Length: 364
Image (cartoon, helix red, strand yellow):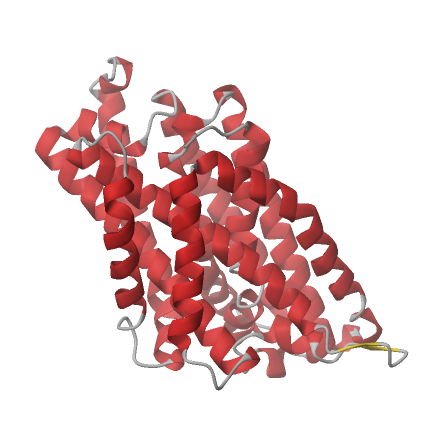
């Protein structure tokens, strides 16, 4: 089992993490509030996400990109630090459960409606848990291999929809008040631009740490622009009225592709891209949780936590919300605040540690 990352592998993991699970939902989350100006909301979210993450990555650089669990314990002390580490572990497992639930919602409502959702959840978790057992290097290599293929499938599919693109769907431009645009930006700031703070548990495994900041921020910009382009194309093809009423508008758009009656109903390609991104996101969440548990328990490896964590995530994914509407409403209204709370807590801790000169002390 190897836990080694190059800076380029870190970059591609970040891109997969941010775009994979957001491609299908971002158009709906922004268009619901900002209508035809949903793309503006996404640009605002990119700006906010960049500001927050510049602060975050700068603070981590002061600690030489040590694991966030080590940093917290160094600053807050052994017991308080480990308590906060357990909270972050819960955040990672909670996010993992939401992503698993999101996949099962999608598969059950759009792909295989007569199949029990447990099948999708258990299959995804088994693959992700096996990947964690094999090590971080295994995930990074698989992701590095699949990314060009997924990019080709995604952008190729989007190009096939451009024959339906209509500029009039964006008129009148900038009609929505700033408050509505900010509401659209709010929903997509936490998902995915604040969630990526869990990568702070993985930076310690990057071989060239001098490149982390550049790769990290570049991944945010590129992922944000990909999501913005997706929102523009989806709204331009279906209109904000329809997009805001669809749970997965990107997937629905792909259903309309018809090229000379040869290429039809290729929406499953987008589903494959999304599922690969979901797999990466779930596995990263599990790695973060396992590294946190290993640190708190002072265990030589995290293998004893794999099966219990998998069962907990599976159980939690089935009990977090009663139905899909409650799930979507919680994500739209509370997700950004939920993750910003953890971001603010850890940022304050790291800032206090710098003032107390804790970032200059040696670690284990």
